Image (cartoon, rainbow, N blue to C red):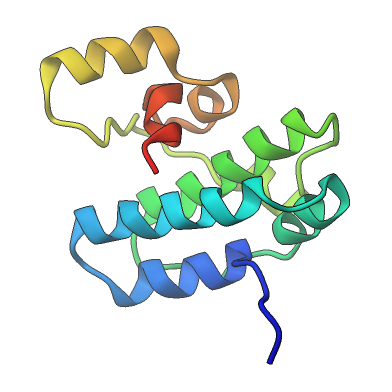
Length: 126
């Protein structure tokens, strides 16, 4: 079987099976690494299908924010499914005060819109 990059649907599957936050982030970074190596058309395909719910609303919303953020970088509209995934209470994945301040300043617009506050640098941690 030929190599296939991880889709957001695949990523949701990994996130739903893993309870350890550090391992979940490793899956997110792995998705981003695979995504970076694909052509723009293929990148758009990796975002289009709605991922199943993970069992944790914060991670479900993160997937929506990630899809919107990456679609914007491709100069495309976000997938329709991503628009409704918004947290009522903001989520700061890091508990470190310095990281929270960094997230307030540097969170990408799509993440702020969805209520997820992380620094754009956190997306480059792979």
